[in-house]
Length: 97
Image (cartoon, rainbow, N blue to C red; front, side, top):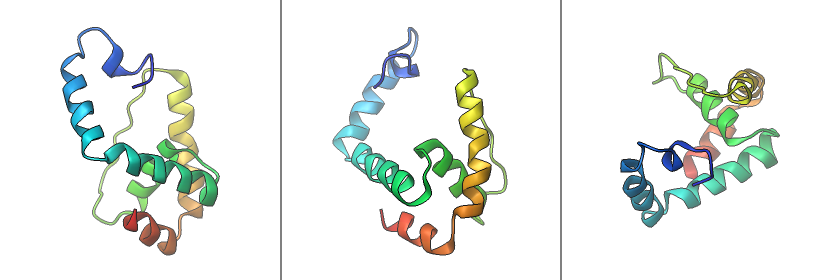
């Protein structure tokens, strides 16, 4: 986990075992693939893709944003631009990952 992330902060040590299990299950590899897809196909980051995916997903009725830093808020708001780019074809390709 990157320095400054919650898993590295004091009081969040309980997250470390969860993160290690995700790593063992290959979930981080999927995140890397989604990150590359976002960059290559939508010119955005993983955060923007995740939020835009939520907006486009008919099973999601509400999106709660969380941020502790100003750049996180800016990134969250950039997702609005990605929503306009995210087609049904993109959604299907994302689901395959």
